[in-house]
Image (cartoon, rainbow, N blue to C red):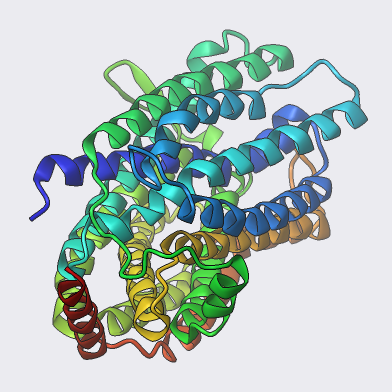
Length: 462
């Protein structure tokens, strides 16, 4: 039985990861176009190039982690030693150097690539911890729920407070250099929180599950096993398009409120002396609604199954997203209500995905006798990176295609494109995700059979 303290500690890890991940998804595009000073199409290409490399880098981290042996275990040492680099490079990513356009572009490529690599270096081992903290599928569901709940709490905090911090650090909104400095300072505050959370995750968790076969297998054998793992392939593609759904909506939300809703014309909401902008509230409310989805995921999936819960949630999110297209700027209440419901649907699928990936690791061990937990989870993390790479690249390219011009009044074509980013485009991604998850072969009974067989083998080995 995993104690509450350890469940919370495991949640700390994704709370840290998600703070930066959501800042990248919601604000990095508009930072590069409106603050840093790069064209949208160039930023879209940079996201695609760097994230494809980063996606390939994930399995490398997984393979190395699988072969790590230390007094702290296979995966926990990475939380200890990469926490500080994670925070420092995150700050550098949101720093604007005093270079020309070419120098800035090179700097952006280098810092963003480094950020994604160190993100993989700490997040892949963190994700893999789920497969070795407990062998019990129900405990994994609970751990995954804690993980996602804390992830969305972290995202909520980051998205709610980030722009107010930027505004607080910037005394003159018309001064570009002050804006740039303010963004760096705001990210620094988030970075300190991330470092502390990762260290807390390290100290509060423990690795328990040992592989049945202690002999080290070759990399070629591990990769061959992965490529023959059909359940993993289904989840990989479903996960890619689920992340495309989220990355397009998150990446375009600030543009939607800045240029379509024109949030400057609305009075800001002030609480405890802090002024919040509509876009920040929109994203933050989405994170709180995600938490509701996470909480609902375990009981609903225990009732009707993980596969069915995933399919129903994403189907509903697709339908609601299509309706979202028709909202006008004066329909703010409906915009926020639909954001809540769509986010509940989207939030419910991610604890299911990670729990299902752990089932895929069991399936691989059941079929081959080899447990490559790190490789399976890193390759699964790769689907996240591909999803975000595709989503953000498409956002940048289509912004340019629709005629977007930073910090100017947008054309009707650009406004229509920005509306599609919150509606039609993510709906298409959601439908594709549902189509693939329908082919997922590991039902609840099959998973129980696999776990029983593996437990029997472990008992016989003792």
